[in-house]
Structure formats: structure tokens, C-alpha cells
Image 1: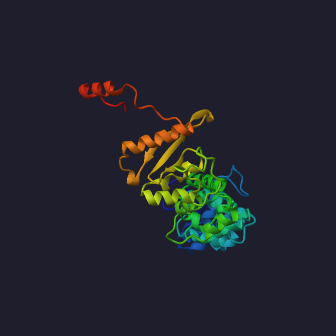
Image 2: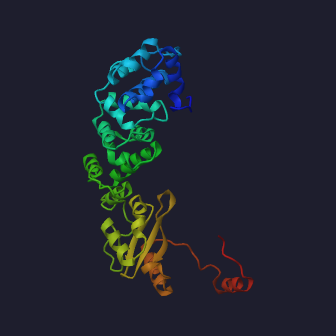
Image 3: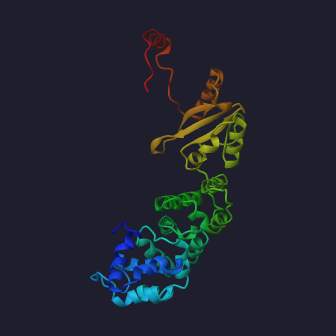
Length: 330
């Protein structure tokens, strides 16, 4: 794609048209935004070799120069595209006075509108100035999540694909996060809200969690089985538990509360062979008293849950490390 010049990629084509039909360039520079953008969109069909023009053509037919000089926006667009969606001329005015940085953007906008996707059209209509970034995002977004509120908050097509996957993840965990509910939540977003908060709210209501390694009913070790349990524990222990909800939701971690004094963290072993006692946490993640840690380990032994053996070597190893100043690995 050619770049640079007074009007970017379309400068060269306009100069050629002006040679064939003098006055074209002056007409473009003085035209109202609607007609100017119609001209840029028509030039994009030649740049990208689409529309009624042959890929072998170097110049528009001379009559096209006359259409640019004297025709209305709709005449110019029909000359380049043939049939045009009703909303196309109006949408072009949302681009502004200068052309889009790439000709493909005009072709993408035309394709979106010819697909008769009302959500896509409404998203563009409600999101202010149309840019190539917004068109990339719109093309990448799942049609169910196309809205001005997503269009304004997502920075690239790649990020839009990630958002699609994030919603799929949420829907696998929250039975109430139907397509209609998610689309409604997106539409109801306030100006200061973010997509991250929207996803987080749905995750906090997840109701399809994996099985817990600790059975209910023990008087000392109580499994945290729901998001409500986890959020409540995070508030009481004043730690970062609320930021680990996704790990719990997919079975990468499980938590239980021991005697109301500490949180016990379990991690799954490979090959589905069980769980491992990973860590013990008290309020604000302060150091855990050794006596409490020993009680937790004894309780896990009752459940047959293994842990890493840190006691190998006994006092002799500790004394050796003291005198040699040997450092821990890692």
C-alpha cells in the first residue's frame, strides 16, 4: 500500500485523476466531509482492487473524475461500489475530514454494513469517530458482544479475540451468564466502568466449581465451596484471595479454613492422583505459628493429603547449614 503525501495513501490516485479531469484535487480539498469521505472510500476500491474496476486498471475511467467534481456523495459511492447500504454515507461522516490511514478500512466498513449486522452498525454509530482500530476490533469481536461499550474499551483485534475467550470462560463457570445477560451487562456499563470489572462480577457469581478435595462435615477443617465463601474469607483474612478466584474456579487451587484460625491451600497433583498441601495463610499473610502449622499438617494426614517433606536431615542438617552459610536453592 502506498503511503505519504498530502492525503496519505490516496494522494497519488487523486493526482492521476486530476491530470485526467482537472479540478478534481481542488474539489476534494474544498469538499464537505461527507463528499470528501465518499471520494476516499471510492479511491479505496481502486487501491484494494475491489468493486467494479478491473485489477488491471491503473486509473479510474475519466468519467469518474467528472462524478467527483459534480456528483453527490451517493453518486460517487454508487459509481465505485455499485449498490450501497443505506447507512454507508452517514457512517463515512464519522471518520472526520482526513482519510483513514489504510484503504482497507473503507472496505471493512462497507463489508460490515452489507452484512446487515444491526449490532455492528449500532456499535459504530454510538462510538464516536470511526477509526481503523475500531473496525479491526469490530471484525474480531464475537457478534454477540458488539456494542459501543466494548468498541471504546478494547484496543486491538487481538485483544477482542481474548475478550471473546474470556466471556466463554465465564459462561463455563456461571450458569446465569447467558448470552442475553452478558449482552445486557455490556449495554448497561457506566462511562467509568471497565470490561475487567464486568468479567470480575460474573466470576464472583460463578456456581459451577470443580469438586473440593476436602469433604464437608469435619469440625476443624471446613472446605470453602462457593465464591461467597472465598470472598468472605478474603475479607476476614485481609489477603489477596479475591484475586485467585479464577484459579479456584478451574481447579488449579482449593482452599479450606482450619478452626477459624487460618486458610489452608491445596494444589492438584498431575495425572489426577490427588491433592497436595501447599501452604497455610493467616491474617494479612503474617508468619504462621509453628504450632498451628503442625496442627494443620496433622489434620491433612488424617485426610491422606500429602505435603512436601521439609524435615529431612533433622538437627544435623540445620547445624551444618548454620556453620557453612549454605544458601537455599532458588
